[in-house]
Image 1 (cartoon, one colour):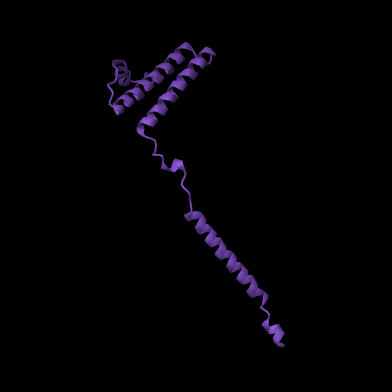
Image 2 (cartoon, rainbow, N blue to C red):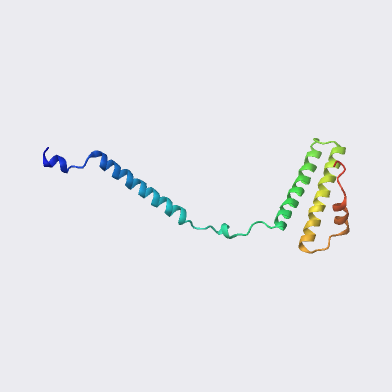
Length: 123
């Protein structure tokens, strides 16, 4: 063998060096990505409170009542079905309002207390 041939690196060694360098770069990039996270303003917002949940539920019930009224006028429900569904939604709304009053320390109105104590007819 001539000395010039023995000084040249083998092709397998140079491929291994490239693969090793790629792995090191990937690991460093992954660590930088994971530990260099910038928190968003929404990350500092506290979770929804019970009152927020009740307000959301109240709004959903009111939307359901509005939709029910529209569908009744469109002829989708009979008078009997409309009244039953409407009454159950109103009782549920009264319960949510009573829970909101309890949570905020307000005194529930007599109508809210009565409706919250009633059970829907179909259950």
